[in-house]
Length: 588
View 1 (spheres, rainbow, N blue to C red):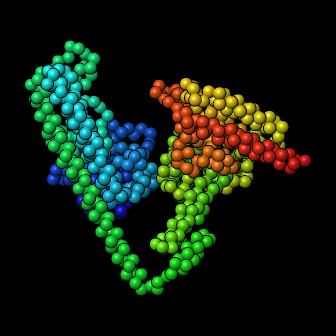
View 2 (cartoon, one colour):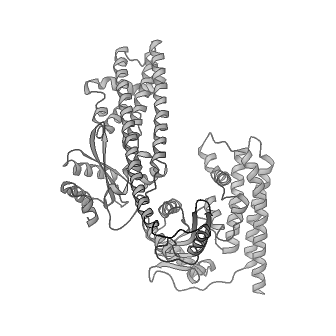
View 3 (cartoon, rainbow, N blue to C red):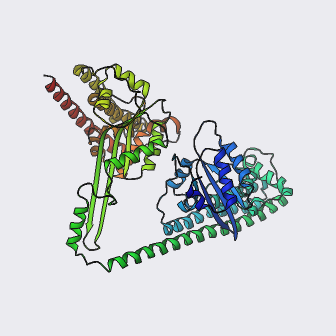
């Protein structure tokens, strides 16, 4: 445990608990979240595991529960960092309160996958939490109304099902409010056991002598609908109905506790901002007033060149270190080559408010080599980009080292280009083969292969055009996605001499073509979220058609994308033909 952990955890017993956990488990981070529930203080320890072979989450939970049992009022939850980041990205309110930098009591000195903190607007979260509670509580009242209807009709089996839904949804809502996530089960008894650690009152909503009633309720979830012999007494339902009233009272209290905490966080944030503004104002009072034109000049000067240290303008070297650190969280590459870089910049100056804004986005195209084949490279690429944030992104080609060396020995020009021309960001000595020389490119053969891609795409575009607007829209979406895929693969093969056959993901292929030309972005308006959504939906068409019986394509969007696809095909054909003309001129 490093010094940072010790200063954050002056409690000696807690230090020993953390030490015991980290000595027996591979842990990324630990968070201590103290919170009040109905006036009582609870301390929840959140242990984020590192992915290592032989480390199972079930046994890890058992070990952590034994470790925290030494300290009264403490409980442990075990999960993985990517689970937390997914919940944060989904806007989970309780999770953003739990995983706060001030709550971290341990971090592994060798960084792996970490929680990515986001800036939180507590005022907006307060409004969102209030709306969420109103929406969810309305569901409970709707089922409660159904319960009373069936009770009045003396249809006790259906009344039991309605009451089961009231209580199950109530437990789920309580779990979201208190813990940030609900247990995936329809069993009320399991929900009661799950929440007991942080809410003893709800954990004993049904006493042990009332478990027969609870069992009947759980049974009613399926039996009341499918088993005509299912029955339950009115007296048992009356007891369970009283429990549901107590549950609704708990939910109101839990919601109030959550809203109160959001208000406290908002007040703390406002106080810090006020102190910061007062400090800045004190400094400003000692400076000369700058007129509007001076502000414009200052903005222009600050954005020229690389900028001094601390200016907020990061160099390519900073980006390289940041990206390599993010990659190392998920796997260990033997080599990383950078073969392309794109940068976009937006600036604005408001002469009325003297406000200046600057947004920069960088995308780096990499070739990443690993000793073992990555099972889910695009998933890991997505995780890496989440770590990098909004202004920095990678798009990578992934190769197994052995395959890469074999291509070098065969004289593959694209692989020799990566080794000889691309920037080498990192490498392990002695692993790349030194044999083999680039073979001459057979332009006629490559041109023929390109035409096969183009003709396939043109045929699919014509097929789709004949059936868009009919009952075959879903099939048209699949065919159009395949046509776009053929154009992307054909372009990459024609210009690079390489195509990533191991990853056939349309949006990924489009990103790769953007390292060559912005044609896809220009034709399909990918910078506009609403327009990009149409292409994303198209890329998902095949899986939707395979696995989703209710899949329906947007016929209007298909017409728009189809028109753009035809012009995109013509532009790609012109680009590739021009490329071959240039290559032939060089050869001659």
